[in-house]
Image (cartoon, rainbow, N blue to C red; front, side, top):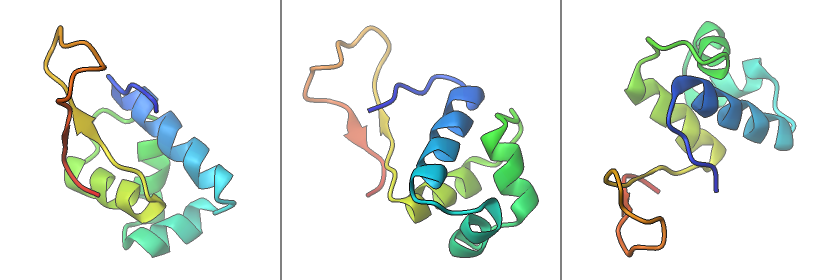
Length: 84
């Protein structure tokens, strides 16, 4: 599990999973129904990427995201799952 606290880390996580699945950026864009430019910008950590599309790309890769409150230890029964 990766702890993502900025757009650069999110992009690196998406890129690593895409490569692990041996997908090109073009293939991922088609799979996620987004533009190739968006995938490139997401993977490079562009701060202004749209969160809805970023989540759509993550879902296409089988990635999920959890949210934790500041100061909450990672072993608490909370993070709340946002999507599967």
